[in-house]
Length: 417
Image (cartoon, rainbow, N blue to C red):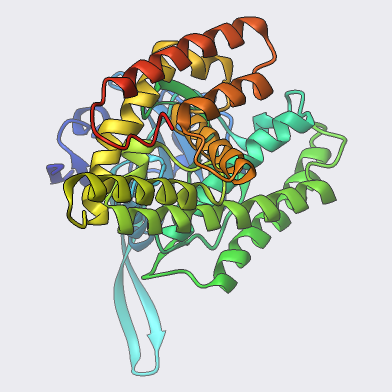
């Protein structure tokens, strides 16, 4: 747990900051408004950022880089707490540091029961600057082709899906309130890959609920679409862009793809409940609706196979564990050993597995028998790997998979059927 140091300076500035950040932040001029920091010998950074209702400054101090947002004390504390909760859910956000509060004296307020005296304070929310990010104001300076548009939209959609599936209503969704980062992470059974990721960069209006209704989910997405028109007007006025930022095709793509990926997320969670398999950690996220159904069908086939072999009704969760250990991982390991994901850069080993199993299903339907995984893999190679070098790779993979399952002496092996 982060250990906070609560300290107060002589000028009535209090720090709710982790101890390791305090030396870098303690002696900044918190006694003045952020809009005057350029006159106070502060090393300000020239960081591109979106429009904000609040004054935000980017500083370097003590060898560390921070974003400082000036707001009220309650708002700063609430937003800090939201960031911590969102990050515990696994949702990508800014990296929160802490809150600095400046006491500004007392103010007299007229109420129904007479004059009341209240403390007046200014709150500063401090976050760490992220590396390798593209704010909205910079995205459109690049060649914003259709391919680039869809890549950006895909990152935005994934963020919406993660939020809504975890019961989070944003309420102020816009490109100005997010960053697009280059994130490197581990893809199950493949290794490390770099991809674009949308990061929530303003949690002021976030509401965390038990669930988000369909009305609120679509409201978030519709608000984002509307905000793109405001962005367009601002960027055109500044001379950055001339063409529309979001077209009718973009709107259809965003709404349609969001609806699809949200359904995929629900299917993935249902699959996890039934099988007790952590998809994100062990398989990799499903690419399309129906992947969970296909994997569950295959696990049920494996359940039947295990039950026949052992003479007892094997529970589904046990069959899923055995399937993962003795089928999925070895097959994906073969794919990875021969560099198959490199020939299909938009697919993971797990998505290739699902597609080959789907191909196996349709072949079996056509031939009215279970053709087996090896035969399906060979046919998949012939149809979808046109390059000769890739087909040779598939030949090696087929031999490796065949050897893998021939080494399994259990009776009734369904994979070499």
